[in-house]
Length: 143
Image: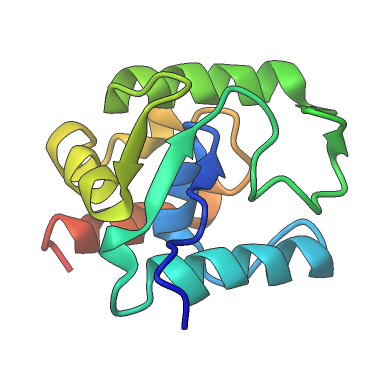
């Protein structure tokens, strides 16, 4: 048995909130399976709060199988950059930062109040479904 921890997950800033609200839906079957493996299999596992995440400014572990990925970019790059900039500012994140999922959730709780996603996530096609807002309210204990 190995005592080596897995490498940290690599995350763009906006994927922290995407992971909070993820409900098993995505851009393609491959994307959804990958995100389920990361979010359900690692972050929401009993020991998930200890999962280490490294912030990146390019395509990350969530993006890997996305049909919209274009090398290290996205076919919607300006929209993605705007989301990343807003989320990085809200959560105090910079490329290269490392934090655990538990620390990320604490930052979300401290800096992203319920009702703020309409503005913070402006331009995201998933925002209108309410999954992320519902998850944010649960995180704040307003279920």
